[in-house]
Amino acid sequence: MHPAFQNSAAAIPITFATKSTWEGISATLPAPARQFAKANAFTAKPGQYLALPADDGSLAHVLFGIEDQTREWRDPFRPGQLPGLLPAGTYSFANAPHDARLAVLAFALGSYRFGRYKKNDAPGARLTPPSGVDMVEITRMADAATLARDLINTPANDMGPEELEQAARALAEKYGAGFISIVGDELLAGNFPLIHAVGMASARAPRLIEFTWGDPKHPKVTLVGKGVCFDSGGLDLKPSSGMLIMKKDMGGAANVLALAQMIMDAKLKVRLRVLIPAVENSVAGNAFRPLDIFKSRKGVNVEIGNTDAEGRLVLADALALADEEKPDLLIDLGTLTGAARVALGPDLPPFYTDDEALAADVARHARTENDPLWRMPLWMPYDKWLDSKTADLNNAPGGAFAGSITCALFLKRFVEHAKSWLHVDIYGWTPTAKPARPEGGECQAARAIYKLLSERYG
Image 1 (tube, one colour):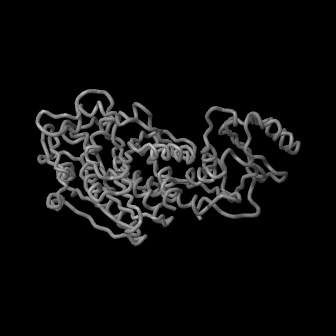
Image 2: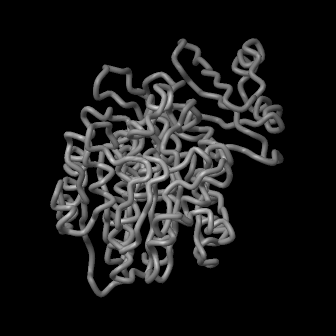
Image 3: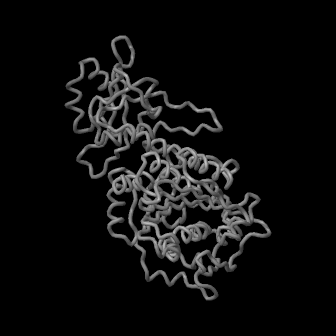
């Protein structure tokens, strides 16, 4: 069981109240507690917390405000605020929040702290889970989120391509997966020229990380994660403000590893393949340049319109490799475009697919898991924007429009044989802390996709 949980018969009760239910709840409290709540102006505003004392001054009861059921939008992760509010001790739910399962998960997610470099006060609050909640599944999801967050939060000096490989190797070994890595100039010999081009300017060798797990007779599910361990922008150098959180540019890889961990831990009936092109996009005399042209693994010649559109380049070679074995489902995750953030903000990653059934399933599980995703179109009239005068296509066509869509269309050029393909343009970062989502690296899309795979292949 996740360390945020602890079974105890003496757990302190937490009562969830809304503005519309507070009056009725208040009437059931002992008179001193009711007067104490009134004196402290408790009105059950969402996120409002009040500790009610016992006669001896100890903590007897907790009141916590959540959104009304009648509100058009309510946050099922609101209880994720509690670990940061409650004093050390063991607690239980006295009544049901809007979604008990998501509330329990939120409690675990809200307990997360990144403490590798600085001692921090980890929350001392523990939750005795309510009956009927699958704690194995909750722990599986919370542990996967911790893996993704820890990888993203680790700065690039300690999370380069080699360290990312070590993390992937450790995960593969834990579950008995077969593991290989193609490093440095071996990428050229193996026909991965775009991965090599993006990473060749760094003193830290680029690589393609791969592991496979599961019965080869089961449906083939392949995950591809963008592993740009730091993105300076290359010769199209980012401003300093644009580099401040570029340690998160391997967030696609981190979330693919989190998803793979859940799949393997749950023993889903798939033959899983994970591919992570891991590079650092640096500046040096041998860095790739604007207007350079490289032949990709697929044989498509790609002109470099912008060296800061490097993520789609490394994904292109990995997707081409994945596509060669005609997987039943090919999924890629990457922190790819600022255009996606302009359109949908940091909390709502867009996803792309031509498979209508897959799109409906992704959207449904995104809602039920509170792992927001929003479908955007593979709008083919924009495909011509990728045209190049000197090559087959350009990685970053000029113009300020539809940047996330044109990125998806670029990647689509490298997927031909997979039965279904899903592309998700994640942010991988929480810029301002929210309930259950501390500021920093974030696990996005992995839980929704895991539940989809569980439904199909469980």
